[in-house]
Image (cartoon, rainbow, N blue to C red; front, side):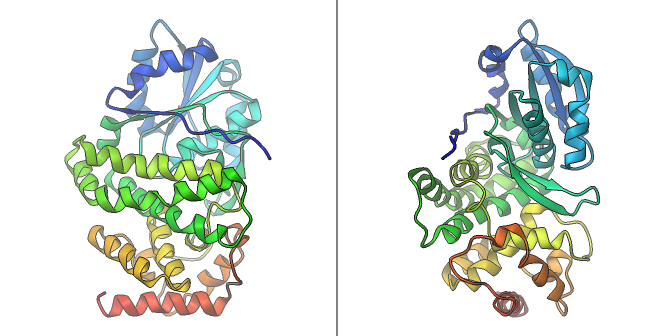
Length: 356
């Protein structure tokens, strides 16, 4: 069994103050890689705390998506090659691209999430897309990032829609991991991952709506911190323990299928995943949990029907066919057929028509 590394993190409005102390053991030079907006938010603060301790050799755009091509392009930048370590700044796609580039170069990576939208900043997994932005694969590094710095002031000023979608994405971990693990002979680490997964929803359901309102006000408070941990850290703790096979199921399969299916509009990962979670819970007969998650989705207007994810309610056939063939469906406690998924999709549509 390969080693699994427990996520290390610092959270708070002063989280970046710890950068020289924590990163200093790994060298004296670093580069910053991320998106344009995320670097604008975090880079001045990172540079300030690094003065006199760690030299920032440059700041670079990760590309337009998390692709192998963009990761490989990063490895060819002279400053990136020269740096002792890499600071990945931004959301999931910027982080995953940079994580894979560091894997190729065998360089230490430290992450600075500027969005509470997923757990990418603490996990070993990289979600990779094709150049046309359709889902390609998930691939694992040899370890997760060395440390994650979560600045809650930056999270409070992040775009609302990413925090909103992050709430939906995190909830899926609570149910997908135990679903995949059901009936399997797990090792100790995997058992720990399943236990961690089952602690995700509590923080989201208790603090999520209040935290989203805090983002609306650009206000840092206890609810924002707790919900951010429930989005970034709690699912990540599960992910680094269970690794690839048990990490996702039908909820993520529906999102990955949606990227390959003609649909209207643009839809964030976590928002579509939350719709997929409602389908999974219906299919698995967890009706009380389905209704709980659906009620939360309705309370903050997360997707709760096909139209909300840009799919024609009269023709979900291609979406369903596509989801059955994603990697997320590799491990499951029983066979899942097209008819089973179709029936649950229609059940969710009926709830929507009834206004439930």
